[in-house]
Amino acid sequence: MAISIRKAKRINELPPYLFAEIDRRKRAALARGVDLIDLGVGDPDIPTPPKIVEKLMEGASKPVNHRYPNSAGLLEFRQAVADWYKRRFGVELDPVKEVLSLIGSKEGIANMSVAFVDPGDLVLVPNPCYPVYHIGASFCGGRNYFLPLTKENDFLPDLNAIPVELARQAKMLWINYPNNPTGAVAEKEFFAAVVEFAHRHNIIVCHDAAYTEMGFDGYRPMSFLEVDGAKEVGMEFHSLSKTFNMTGWRIGMAVGNHELVGALAQVKSNVDSGIFQAVQEAAIEALRLGDEIVEPSRKVFQERRDILVSGLRSAGIECEKPRATFYVWVSVPKGLTSAQFATRLLDEAGVVTTPGNGLGEAGEGYVRFTVCVDKKRFDPGVADVGAAESFVQLLDTLPVAGAERDRGEHYPLNH
Ligand SMILES: *Cc1c(COP(=O)(O)O)cnc(C)c1O
Image 1 (cartoon, helix red, strand yellow):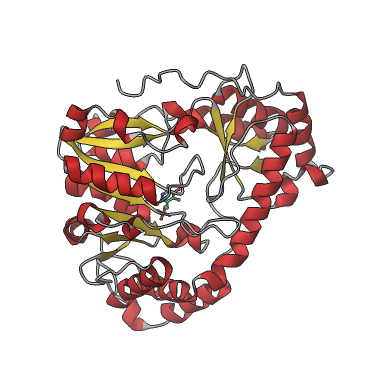
Image 2 (tube, rainbow, N blue to C red):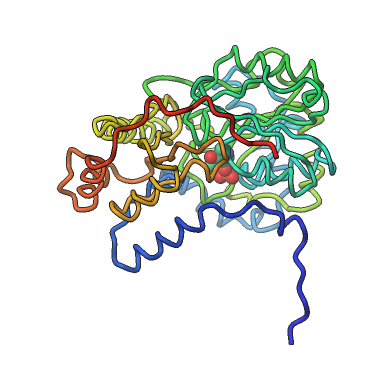
């Protein structure tokens, strides 16, 4: 007989998995033989550029790379990150003290809480958001205070709405621009206000910059570190995943304030042994080539965005046209909840999306579409392509988006 197994509280206290129902319906549809159009996952379908793959193959055959890597990353990789930041953003970084390799930025984001969040510490987290920010804090016993991202505020957190006594207690603030899931972008003025806020209340700022290279129509999103004083208060998480279609490779970086980077390095040196050096060598090549290999996929995502947005809008569905990221944040038609809309898209059209409330209560009223699928699959212009046809038909039958939907309501974000 098995022993009685009791999971740690941190696991039992995880928020309910809101995608469980969508996952169940997705499996059921697949079992029925439905040709699903998966606009749910944020994972590029475009392969990694061949030049990067070649570097990996070269590196994989070198015995020196078969041994344990250094947890902080090859100095050559950290130097390549510093060179790229200089070239791309005009930001100076010391490769030894201000750059750290990550096993994908998700790993670093989770471990950031291990480095800085003690039980009871207050962490400011946008809502909706990439869930690792608040789950990382919860795992360490931290308390999350959620900052709603609303259309009225251009999906930027309203720092002035944070009660002063909470701002004083707060230890850390997470921000993410270009933003997943809303597709919103931030400009210098916002980042400067964040730096001022952080100085005033002594708060560590963590900026997740995973999508800076996915700007469209010539728009180049900035780094948080470009703002005066940013390095005094914070750091930035970046990744090769989205930039170079390398999500499976697991390589990213943390850059910025040397004390913050140093403490994260200390945690990591105790729990991981770094990234396969051949992957780091391939990443160096990717950073060196930069735009030359990013531009082709940027064009592909931009075209898909245009097709999806115009298709949705012509069906009367309200959505933001993102200036960056491969996410389209869509208002649900009047009278439906996020879950109901996502369910109808799945059951009636075979289109998988992410209900906004699954990424935070303030995401209710929205559904997130990604464009990580070939355009033929969802282009109303080529609706004779099987699956897309029912998508267009469904859109035609839906009630028109509720432009007048009640957006001012108070979301019970902080229980
Ligand atoms: C995809 C994504 C990341 C990157 O994750 P990796 O672990 O580097 O693959 C980080 N933040 C956000 C918001 C993302 O969407």
